[in-house]
Structures are given as C-alpha cells and as structure tokens.
Length: 516
View 1: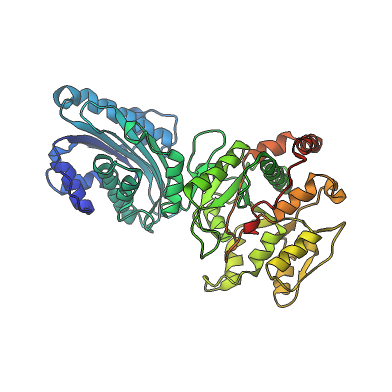
View 2: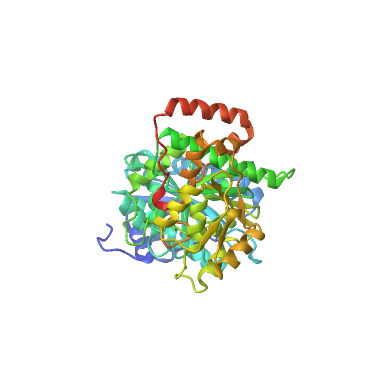
C-alpha cells in the first residue's frame, strides 16, 4: 500500500512493484527507456512489468503503430497506446484480468540531439484501470524539456513517467493531488507541461479548461492555448513557423459589443501584417493574450473562474487565446520565438505603449534597455493604434505621466505624432525611426467622431497592460485571419452600422482600462 508521506522516485516505483494489483507494459521512443528502468532497478520488477519496448527504428515503429503520422505527435502517441493496450489485454486478461489493474505507459520524445538543433519536446501517455476489469482512463501530456543535455532530459522523463503512473493509481482523488504528484521534483524546473488531455471516469468530474489554467498558475507551463473551433492543442502547434499577431488586453468587458470591437481591431492588425508579408506564402495567426498574473504587484491573482469568463467571451467571438504565466511582453516574445522565425507583431493602444516605455524594469539587470532588447528580438514590432487627444490627455493626467508632447490630426494622436523630452525622447525617436513602433491608420469614419470608431479606438487604446511590466495582461484572437481574408472594408462597415443600430444605447467603456 502507498505511504501517506510524499515519496521520492525510487520509493514510488518500488511501491508500484510491490502492489500485486498493478501490472502493465512500457513503450518508450526517443529518450531511452528511463521510465521502465526505474521499475527494473528498484527491485521486484516482475510484480509490475509485463513488457518494455523501444521501437526506435522508423520502419519498426510504423510496423507496430502504423504510418502516416509524425513520430513525435499526439496521433503517434494514441496509436502506441491503442496497440500496447490491446496486446496487453489480449495476452493477460484471461489469466490476470479479475485481480489486476492494468496500465500501459507510452511516450514518443524528441530529446536534445547531438548538435542541439532540435526542439526538445515530447508526448507522454498513460492508460490505466482503477479497478480490475474496470473501464480504461487516459492521461495525455505534451511536455517541453528544459535541461541542457540529452542525458539530463532522459532522466527528467524517467522521473515524470514514474510520477504519472504513481499519481494515476494513488493520487487521483482530486485534481490538485494528481497535479502535485505529477509535478514532484521535475516539473517547472526541468520540464514544462503545456497540454493535458484526460479521458475516462477517473477524471469525469474535473473541469478540463480549469486544469489548463492551473498548469499556468502553478508554473507548470509558460502558456496554454484555448481554441475557438476545436479542442485545445499545445501552443507549438498553433505558432509553428507562422507569422503571428498578438493582441494584449485585459478583456474584462465580455459583452458582444466589446467582442466585436476586439475582433475588428485585431483584424486590422492581421491586415497590416499581411501587407508587410506581401506575396510570401507565410501563414499567419492572430491570438488574444491574457495573463494569470495579478493586475498590480500588491493585488491577488485573478480567480480561475474570472479568467475562464474572459476566455469564453473571446472564444465565443471566434478568437483563439493564449494564456500566459508572466506579464511582460518580452516573455511572450520569448515563448513565440521558440516556435517561429517569422515576423511577430503586437497590437497595442497608445496608452499601453506609453506605459510600457515608461517602466523602469527594476527586475532586470539592464533595466529598460534590456527589456526593449528582449522585446524586439528576432523581427518583433508593435502596431500602435491612435488615441483621441482628449482621452490621451486625461489618461496621462490620471497616471501622472509627464514629458509627453504631440501633434494631432482631427482630434486624434498617432504614435508618430508623439514626442518625449530627452534623454528618453532620443530612445523613443529611435524606436519610431527604426520602425519598431508602427502607427496604425485611423479609419476615415473615425475622423468624423460619429461612428463606432471613436469609442472603439479609444477603448482599445486604453486596454493595455498595467503594473510594472511591459505587459500586464494580454488578449489575442485567431478568428482574425479568416475575418481579414473574407471581409471587405464595406462588409466591415455594414457590420459596424448594424451593431451600432443594435447597441446604440450601450456606452463603450474603456475596455480593460485598469490595464492601460
């Protein structure tokens, strides 16, 4: 029986070996056979291990699990689970099925290669029974490995695998106990888990979306992805080799009117990026970005229910969402640049840009210069929406921001019309001249200040990040790509007029003004 005390990896494997009710097989590809090795070296392995296999050769792997899928993918993992589970049950159900809780552990991993040029990640799966003869339960994980060498990555996978099997049999009472057991001694420091899929009665009462949020809040993942038109996937599958537009915001207003504003403004960012790309074949993705971090350093972190409320509103509007652990925009840059070398563009309001540029970044040794260097690394730019002069003046006063001057056009101020007193003014002028900050055009309708654009742009300009970081809350949208490709300007105007007529009694409050 398992101990009430928290066990290390050795004693977890030994406990499973000494439990006469657990018995299963191991199939591991790409990072040695480190999970099975633990059970083989701690003693009494014959009580747990039915078989170990490592189909490294592609032809052998295809013969066992079928061809047609990438070797490190969810599809290959599921094929491995199905094959190994079927074989285990076929061979042993008759002799052991009535008294055995069967399990099948599999992984397919791309550990660090000799040259260090690959993306170190993998898929890990477990199928298990809670009672002899009971229905199967599945746990599927996507992991990113952080250790600098192949050997260390193999060791980390071995610990995680033992944790997963032990937690499934002895710590599955609650979502929290399961995740704590899974993460022990290895997650966060050595391995990142950015995707979890659960199936079966063992987890039927758990909220899958809340589980993804918890991965980020607990520090198990830097970001997780929520899809508007399908099941969640790891962020890498959305970002891989794509040109990306990230729209940061708090998105506290979840009504349909604000959702339409967010969609239109992000769509404009997608259009701008597509114009930049010209005739290239690079695929684009637009994403809303939020963060689990507190609004201000002295405030509590948002509740999971509040985060899901905001995420659901964006998903309902057709947008995809990246939920980040950290608030700074340069951390978002770092994560996205793991998966693409294509252009990355942020869409931000004028007040967000001002707040970001004024921060001292006392958490960084290089302060503001280091923050800017991290942010604009590898083809990153910020599209900056204009703001009405009246709103800008009010915002600067409310935030005690000084040193700013500007020209205006028909009551609007773009980033190119903004100036700051030296010495920071010299750096700000450099960012403009080097096109790190790119002014977004004010639609003609906005110049009249009669349509939705005045309120919408003012709202978006005030929806930036707060706190002491470059970005304190974010929000991206992926429907934008389709919107941008299928909606003409006239169609957008028709939608706008219809929305105005329907919602003319609704006043546009500043969207997420707390994060401006």
